[in-house]
Length: 62
Image (cartoon, rainbow, N blue to C red; front, side):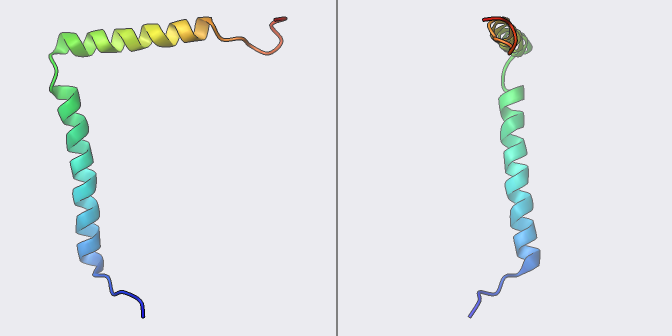
């Protein structure tokens, strides 16, 4: 036979998991000083820019 599931309990558990995940993301974002967050964002932007510079587009003749 199939296992019985209480939908109210399942919804509450899913909401708790979702809230825990959001909380962990917020802890990572807000657990650092503003200057470190800005530095990390600038480094990521620079890395993306360098990656775009080295991209070979089709039809470039290379």
